[in-house]
Length: 235
Image (tube, rainbow, N blue to C red; front, side, top):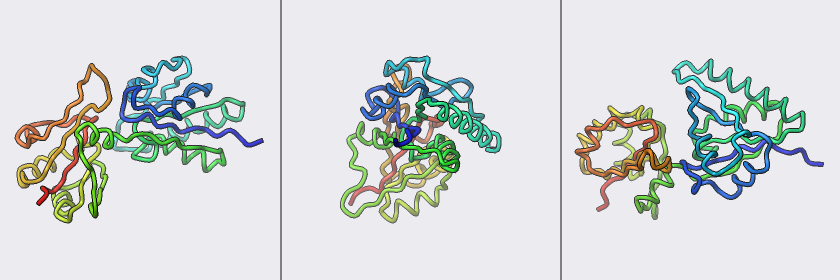
C-alpha cells in the first residue's frame, strides 16, 4: 500500500473564493493543518477559517520576524520533526500557505526537512497574488515575445530600469522592502506603467487597492501585503 503523503497546500492570495477544489478536499480530509503565524496572527489560518473548515484542526506555528534566520530555521526543523512523528503515528497532515507553495513560500523549509528524512510530500498549486492582481486590473502580463520577472523586494532602482528597458515586465513582491528604490524609479521614470496592489483577497476589513497614479504612489509607504507590476510604455 502506497504511503500517504503530507500535503503542502496553496490557499491563493486570500479569501475562500481563491481556494482550489483540490486544496479544499485536502483540508477537509486531513486530521491536522499546520499554518505559520507572526505574533499569533496567520493570514493562512484566517483564509482556512473563511472556508468553514473545522477550527480545531488548525495548528499555528509562530515564526519570529527577524533578519537573523537561525531561530526561524530551528522552528522549521522542529516543526518538521513533530509532523514526522504525527505522520508515523498515522495522522494525515496538511501544511498550508497563502499564495502558491512554490513561490516564496515559508512552508518549503519544512517540506525540504521532511524530504531529507524520506517522508513523502506532495505540493498542491494555488493562485499567486500577482496573478490575482493582474486579473483584477485586467492586465495582460506577457504577450508575444515579452518576458516576465518576479522578484522579492530586494531590488535596486538600476535593476528595475535595466529589466524594464530590456522589455521585461517586472513583478515586485514584498514591496515594503523596496520602498525607497521604487520611489526613485517613479521619480526618474514616470513614463513607465506602474500597477500597485494592496490586500488582494484579504477581505472587507482591508479593502483591495489598485493604484496607477504615479504622484500618489511616490507618497506611499507600502505595507507587507502589497506588490507592484512595472512595464515599459507600449510604443
